[in-house]
Image 1 (cartoon, helix red, strand yellow):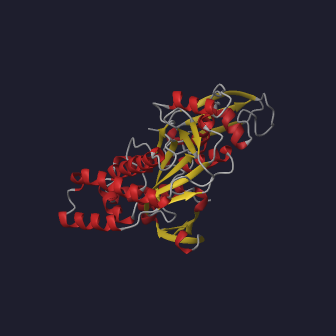
Image 2: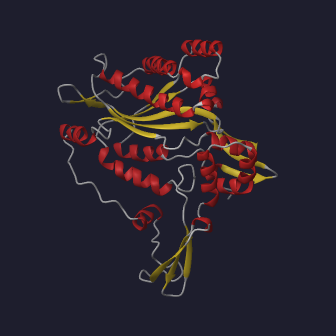
Image 3: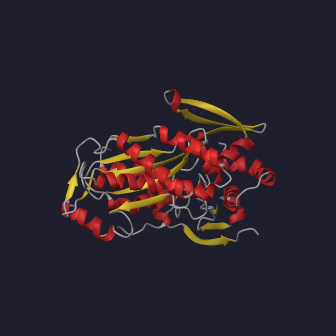
Length: 371
């Protein structure tokens, strides 16, 4: 099976020489190239039956398709205690493609404004007496790509159908989402463009006339906000959260081939009834699109708001559970890597793969990373 790593190992170094990459992009290419190879070191497991097994270290880069499994499982397990017995909705806020030009100039500013404006939109409308007049708590996740790897900045939110009222009660909404998407879209557009005007100086290369034209188009355009029906159970929210929170630009199973300087991969064309199609790109173009979605260093793509925010969670979330008669339990202990792999794959890494004896494992020698 061809993987992203194979493409970068074959064409990445040459691409880096020919293009002016940001340090974070250089780091992503190098990390993915070296992931689970001798370059990062590893360890040798010795078993009593004489068998030895070499395992190389992972790069742990958040753009690497290989390194998100354990991270996702740990994150989902940590969120287990945050679930409430209420319906949950999936809401998506998307930026118009006219803003892509500004993303290329200063992605950090645009992405921060996207997350800020979308969160404030939801918070303001939840607090409105016209709807539920509550303080909600939700998780927001930034994605920047479409299925064909082009730039498509949008935010996924998982929102409970209820929250805390001013008088300290927990109010649960109806089966339908309590805020019309058209109302959210208009408020989101207004907030984002208001904040964007305040940051105009960050995009000074854009001529004043072009800036006014962009703003004129954006104000007249209908912005896209989407809401999915509730999840079946709170438990299904965790599966869904993990699917979105640690998704990378493209997973390895979508890559179909690499030959003669071209890369083929599958994608869904949402403009054509979500039909599954195949795209064939020059390797350099594939890497260019892949690197478009390497986020700025230190950028937080997962953010918590309301009663799930770090500042309020300990007090407010506990109150929500008491009001909903949820049994308060002690948070589960963090599983070791061995136990986590056993849970995910069903395989015990301390059991010899040859003789299958449970107590066959002897010791572990470490392999230093190459310099």
